[in-house]
Length: 466
Image (cartoon, rainbow, N blue to C red; front, side, top):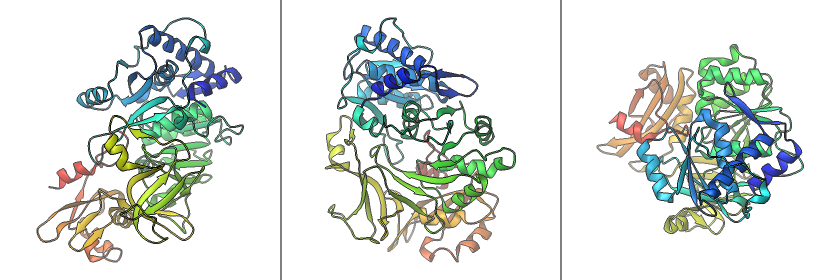
């Protein structure tokens, strides 16, 4: 299966059905999506762009309809799509386009179109052909371009039972240029519900979107969930239609999971764990108060193991590096064989996280390997510290990170969003954290700094704290 082939089948079966809506901007049927994509593909081929050529796609979150056309048009021409958010700095966009050797760049309002026939006029891509280069968030260094084939992107698609059949509408606010955003694009062509989004996320607007469309399935990142709860949207909007609320891109704090269960009374709260490198491998966890901090078990033929320094598997309960195995052909770093060899190992992907498995195979994350704070003789998990801080009712959001210390080398600092006085929070944490885990510095911010994918930028936090 390839994504263009999937769109062709969907358009033949449901040409007049709406595939995607950007609230306030418009909608697009499967038939229109196919027609516009084919017209773009023919125009690109007429310009000499074809198999293996890289084409940059620089779009904003209000441009999902044009972006969907551009992505499938590039793939239909046999070329490789390079999705980039228009929220990136111009210099970063230029550097990424130069890195992948893009031969063309498409932007909203600038999509070429050529009249003609249908798919028979184009050279269909093969499942093993490269289809996409997606740049990582860059939270631990300069972003890397992760290359995926058609078979990787379309893995699991095209089955008789379409995903999320319990819903007529699926609502999300994921940005273009992220792995989570690409997952929603695939859902738009493969899943049962119409996918709806909005140009800009705010807690009230997103809750109103859910209420307006009676969305049965909703996807957020934890930061969005935290903002919605802090704004009290459940008191002003009817969220009873939601049967599945999925959280992705970062671990969901346990207290937030409990609060979401109350705010969305009919929803199953689900946490998804993967990465740009590992997709479509993932773990899924239905929120369980008995295992509030687990990110679940692997699904759809994937696997997880905890590896020692030599790559050997560790037993349950032992902390080590998290490796995931994809059920599909694995991805690779574009143009970087050395980095590919370090991260992609015989079908397994090194996730860059530390964690452990319990006796039932549930995965628990200890920390990002790069975020662990080595304080004196101890290693401190920032995830564990953040979970403790989140338990205070006056804390809206929190992030723990390491700062220099004259005797310990590094010590714990915590940035909080909320109204809790620092001394009150210190007293609260004394019963929840060990002495070496207690923050030596607390700072209060109006909001945590984030990259365009919604992940906390801890490098920026360290600059604020110093």
